[in-house]
Image 1 (tube, rainbow, N blue to C red):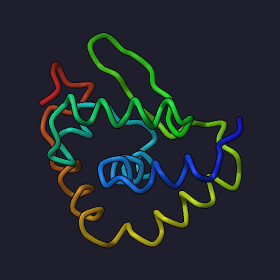
Image 2 (cartoon, rainbow, N blue to C red; image 1 turned 90 degrees about the vertical axis):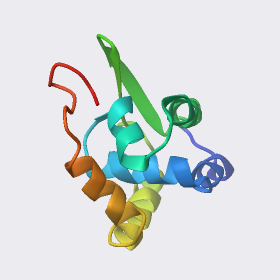
Image 3 (cartoon, rainbow, N blue to C red; image 1 turned 60 degrees about the horizontal axis):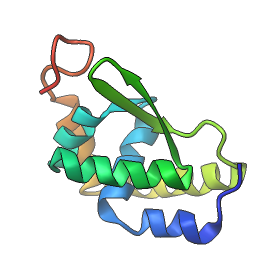
Length: 117
């Protein structure tokens, strides 16, 4: 897999995509409803950004019934993993990234329950 640096950095330049990626780095996998809840973004908007991340090769998805789950793509080049990890290490304790993690942790009815919130 090859990702051009300009594609990586243009993906990271958008707040919704960056916040989504940081949550995906914190968790192995998240459902669209979890990202919607954590970021306070409407489902069509988060789905559009996740589609862009998928098209750029940064994330992969899988379907499970009604839910679509996303994760950081497992075949990213090492340099991309290092960039993402460095960004994560630099922002995890700062708003809004810290707050996103707290909101997600408090989400009721997370996947695995009968319904997403």
